[in-house]
Amino acid sequence: MIWQQFQQAAEEALAQGQLADAERLFRTFLEECKKDESAHAAHANAAKGLAELLSKRCAFTEAEAILFGILNSLEAASPRDNLAVSTILEALGTVYLLRKEFYRAAIFLSRAAVLRKATSEAKSASMPNLLAKLAKAEVMLGNLEIAETLMRRALKKKEAIFGAEHPTHAEALFDLGDLLKQMERYNDAEVLLLRALNLVGEPNSKNPLSINILEALAEVYAQMGQTPAAIDLLTKALSLFEQDKEKAPHENLKLNARINKLKGPASAAKDKSAQDDELEILMREFEYIEEFDPRSSIRFWELSQKIADLLEERSKYSDALRFRKQEMDLTERLFGYKHPESVRSLSSMVRSNLMMDDLKEAGAYLQEILDIQDLCFGITPEDRLNTHLLLAELARKSNDLSSAENWVYNSVNLLEVSSEKAKHRLVKEIQAQEKLHAERGETDCVKRLGELKTSLMPHGNDVAEKKGNHVIDENMDKVMREHGIIP
Image 1: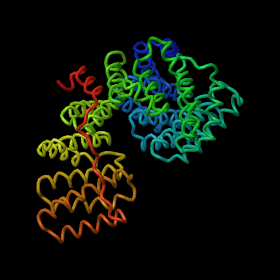
Image 2 (image 1 turned 90 degrees about the vertical axis):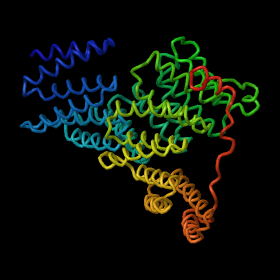
Image 3 (image 1 turned 45 degrees about the vertical axis):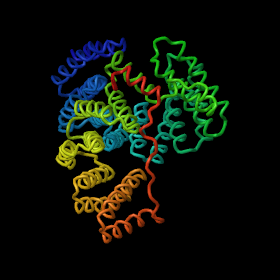
């Protein structure tokens, strides 16, 4: 069979890191499989391999289209090969994980797991790997207890297949330990992370997992009050980074900053350098990816968000807006226009323009949000609440206080399934409207809004505004000038 030759060549090219050749061969492998209607498993593996390569260069839309095309043909085949269908469902779930569409990822990975369970592959390593991916989706959705159950099942299955001390268990142990750290179960996390560290052997810079384990374990010790142990582990990780000249400089900066923070205020004051400046660390990483790692588009997008947030905290709104625009462009290219991340990106543009009192631009972006929001799969209640609050703020700044108040009341019903941060924003908006009504002498409106605020915050406490946002650290000013953000 000709397709077998292309499969072997594609896998060899991939193993050698020849990604362009591997992609070309996987495309040919897929086309040859289509000529053999009975080669369901090969068909699925070809599509999965090609989708993984496309995802590496963030061509998610093309990967998704290919996988759905194969899924439709496999589901229509008679007899249907459930293992092949499961392979495609898993590949789709993986694409959605990378695209940060965690609801979709969980749905497709769950469907894949159900089908896989009924096949001969249920007892192979493919099943725990699938459960591990599903667990990651659940973590991102905030379902930590479900994720823990899935991770433990995956680990148990791997141990049954390979034995308890197999080196490949290190990543599963790290993921579970890191999850328990998030859940503040530090003693349990310590046990798992130490097991993982024992399996990877002596940490080295060529094995990123080993350094990730050192950092996670250090954070566990820091939270347990064992600061010297945490500093020792981070110092070891830093020395490994410094030995490898190819490592990005921002990695060293991050570790140095964390070590100095653990050493306490005296150390931080003594070493008041750019290493303590979060903005510089992000800018260094931004610059590094832009020059050396253009495939890391997702990380580039995340950095644009974080840098813009930090600039806004320092009241550098016009500078932040440049990064917001880049974030929005990357969002549309990576995820497509009708995507939950587009709503969040556009919301950031609205907020930035509102901070600059550019109501016309803010209104234009807000209209785009309204146009696409209901078309997006996976829009959360909190995203809807944030949109209502943006509408309220825009109406208030446009002196349409009646509409502003209506949007506030529309937001209240969404609070039950939103975060404390969203509640904080809602209370701040109520306070702003309350102040305007008070200035106009509209006592009935002030009373009504005051009662609403009291119901949200039992004692009616005001939300304090941040002080000193305009104070710019000299190090940050220097960095921004170097990168052309400010003159």
